[in-house]
Image (cartoon, rainbow, N blue to C red):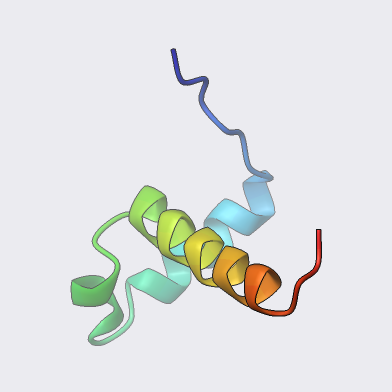
Length: 52
């Protein structure tokens, strides 16, 4: 079973502010969606560079 990931309150506020601006609200309809996409992008970068 998946366990929820907790994020810092200030980080959550920054994400909410970012995703509420302009077209960001369509690209990232929720904080969870933003975090999922950001983690996936970072994971691909790390894997591409061969880092563990």
